[in-house]
Length: 177
Ligand code: THU
Image 1 (spheres, rainbow, N blue to C red):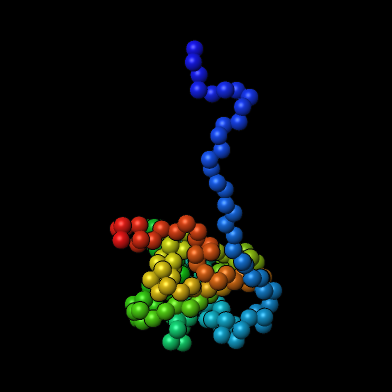
Image 2 (spheres, rainbow, N blue to C red):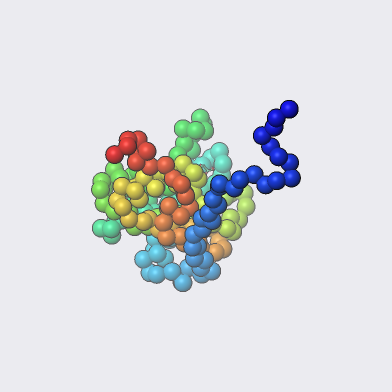
C-alpha cells in the first residue's frame, strides 16, 4: 500500500518561529516615577475608592492622562446581571473619549484593591479593556503607556498597549484598503 509518510525521516520544515517580547519597567517605590506619573497613579488610587463592586469586592481605579493635561478617571461599576457591569479602564477611556473627543491619550494608570485580601501585585487589564484601549492607540497613531499597581507592591510600566496585546485586531481588517 502506498503511503505518504516515511517513518524515520523528518517532515519538510516550512514553518517559522518568532519570539515576541516587550520591555516592562518595574519600580519598587512610587517616588521612582516622574511627578506626573506619581500624580496619575494617586488619581487612580483615589478613583478606586468609588468603585461599585458589591459582587466581587474587588475595586479598580483608572486615571487617563490626556495630551491637553486633563486627567479623566474611572472605576469598575458592577451589576447584579454580571456581564452588564464595566471595568474601570473602559469607564475611564470611554469617558475621556466622550468629554475630550480626539484628544490623544498619553498614559493610563490602573490600581486595584480587594476587601478580602491585600493585592500586592499589579493587576493587568482584562482582554476586553486591552482591546478597547488599543482602539485609541491605533486611532491616534501614538502609544499609550500603562502604569499598574496593586494596593501595595511593585509598579509595572509598559510603553504601549500593543506590547501587551500582540497580534491585536484592528479596523484594518474590516476592509482591504
Ligand atoms: N475589573 C476591572 O475593573 N478591570 C480589569 O481589567 C479587570 C477586572 C473589575 C471587573 C469586576 O468589577 C471586578 O474587577 C472583578 O472582576
